Length: 182
Image 1 (tube, one colour):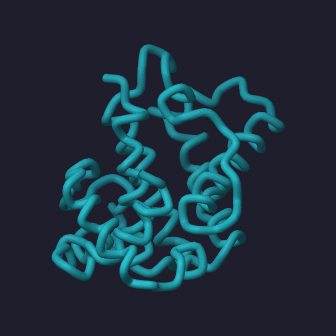
Image 2 (cartoon, helix red, strand yellow):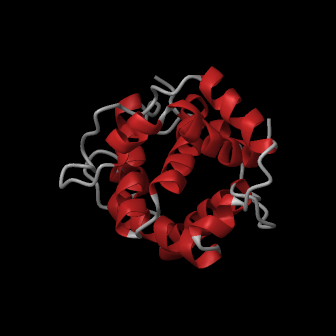
Image 3 (spheres, one colour):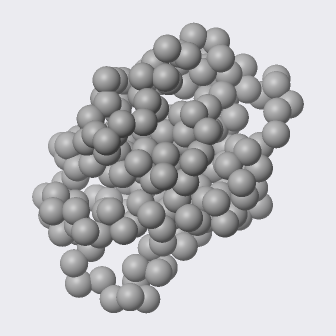
């Protein structure tokens, strides 16, 4: 299953039956970064599959274009990075990285999101499973949720529309099983 498919199909899932959940998840509030009504991880693989098949028939503009292109994706990644690197729970994984290593990591994430949203960027990094295996005893769902919520916060701060926010978060959540070890 291509990552690109996850983004475009997620749009239709939103239109077909998740409108209420989307409004709840993306309701802007001061506590968005720390809590949502529906915690990450609640979207089933079946729902993501429905999104994929519906979206392929739509012929809609790519998520890349709807997000605002490369610079918009890079801005969301940069804002997320600031939160993540300074977080007490997950920032520990980045202690000791040089400025150059952090810039390389940032570029890999930008390329991954750019490629996944339907544009010609090429993600050259390792698989998510390999990249995250053995990190300090393994990443937990709680740590993943922190990352997920920081992405949600950065999307909101960058004024990404609800539908596109949802699509990005569906993609991020689709990586959970590859990243979480315990």
